[in-house]
Length: 413
Image (cartoon, rainbow, N blue to C red; front, side):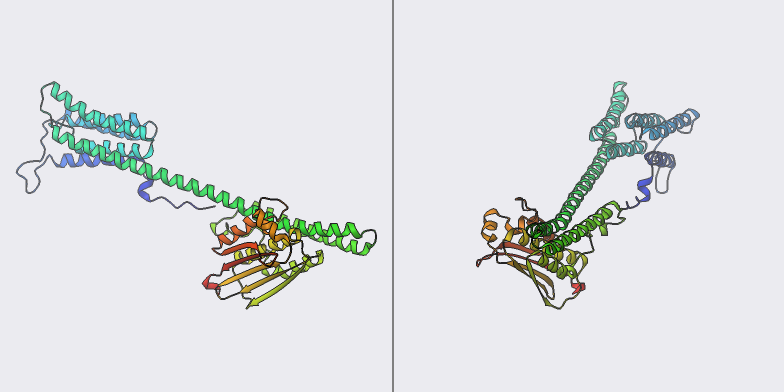
């Protein structure tokens, strides 16, 4: 289970706090501009009603509307924006100006950004239309009464609203893209996990079923004439069945146990098997009637667990295919531990090579007795996940060859 990183502090601030802060900053600057600042011949703005009781009352009412609109943004964004726009228009009446000033419109710009960033694009466009419509309506009202209208200044204010919408829409699209990437990653993780479980089940069951099939056939043939040999074959069947059942129980336990970190996601479901078990695999298969000769080349140094398990599973799968499909009584397994890689080769001299070439899967693909090539696919997937090389093809002199090269990380060479 992945841990979601904490959001930056500014992202945890609710929208109404931002709109209120924008309104208060705009009001403070408006108040400051009523005075002559150093270097100015006169105050930047005039306001006949600004310091009168009726002007202050209008400013107080506008502030209340702006705060109320900010609180409504999350529940009803468009109605909250309407209240903020009404506050901006009302506050401008006490400033002796011919347009809605930018300082009174900053809170509306913040609201447009919040709506565009957090709501569907249709709602964001509606918010921008409301903002631009308010500015246009204010100018048209002044023109209708024959009053002076600050068209140029109002166009600048309108531009800030458009920029706020563009930024909010970009943030919204970026968040949607990030969500899509997370969903795709989750879907890919589920698919990869399903394939991993399928490989583990196939590799675990196919070999045991092959050994059981051979031993049961041998027991059936000699049960009347050689009861001791039949008893031994039945014992091997019992052992293989118990080992398979134990492996399935370990696998189900691993699936039921929650894994706290991503580092364990690629761990094998049954980590108890590795190259150290190849000799035991050879003895079991030989006892079932197919002799397995194992050759160890190079210095047997430790390899990472994922390479260890995958190498064993590839050998197990290839040997199982020899048992079930090669039509031969022996095969050879070579494990070569080189400086930078682990090389595996499984050779048999059976007549199954031609059928393998025709069917596209052959001895390496029909591990479970099917014609879909899940064994070959599973081996290719294992090698591909480890960035190695894999081949499975008939030999010119007869038989079949399965080979894999698994690179070993530099830290464990």
